[in-house]
Length: 507
Image (cartoon, rainbow, N blue to C red; front, side):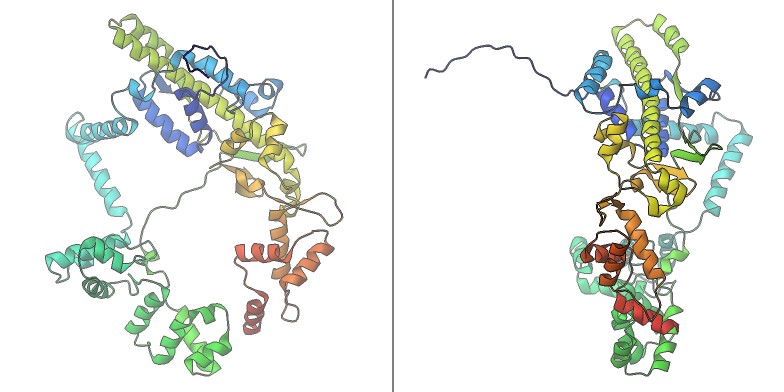
């Protein structure tokens, strides 16, 4: 067989992920807060974008409140099927250039420059003397009223110690490794190797740091933390030391074995347990740390007078931007070089695409949320026991979207319902078969049933996992014993033996 070269023309389909399509997909999986931060960066980068400060018009409000044919038949979805890719590609062929290379600075650089400029202008030059003084006063007040962190508290004590310069640097390093609970959860051997010092030196420095306030801080585990507090109270006798070394028995409420390990009677054991309860297992929690993230709903569900449900986006946290067409026309009329024309054209196209992407994102989230509410109507009306088993494909088929789109919509987003605030992914649960072949049960509903059965236990009737399986089968739920054990452990519910001990002690 001879070998040769020849030219062929072939026709085929391929997925082209343009920068604009990548941006649209990225926006879809953001929460409203993440989206707001992203839009703020784009406002700094793109001179043609501006914040829409106007009120939502009545037409817009009605458009968001109803799920009409225009919303249902809108095919510009952010899915990865052929029709969606083709339509997205056709809409963005003109702007296939590298989005990031259009600008000289990155998003982070632009934001940092703007923040720095604002701070300089407000304090040291462009404003009046009074406004500068007010700005400085505000910064000082914010710093003074901020809660002191644990690391700052320990560093202040470190400054008063007699460490030599080398040991002081090592001590500062160890303080930096303390977590918010006050523990130092690192391998000292690995840390000593990293710092190039001996493990013995590191342990000596740690022992000195463990004398700092609050007592128990910088313990390597719960046992060491509690031991430090007991030593300060002069209560670390052999019996207490034995109890600290056998905390697992205390966690299992195995009092007989604990009495034997400590060599004490039941009365002394009760007093020692009371002393342990008076200690602080997380000494670092008394100090300020990073603020916990506040979960703000992206979608709000409310009951209507006719018994239905209204599903709306949370417009309080939803950014609104528009393209300043007038400014674009003015600037475009005075451009001279080809580079300037290319820059302003790219800005206009990117701004227009962002506005369209935000609108499409809102429509897509509403479609998914409305279908979720329709599927889980029983949960909203009657509670968790009526939560239906549900998967992404069911929602995707119902609203004629791709599963990947539904997955992105339900990521990092929360929905406010009359029954509380839930992540959208909460409503997707596995199905557990019914005994009689009827409608399947939601795994979350089954977990709720198991928890309810255990909460109503008495000392005379503590339910084993096998007995829970029997009761669930009587209720029509076909479930295996290992599944019950898995669900129970996931809810941090102890075994029947441990629960029996707990009930005995409570009498």
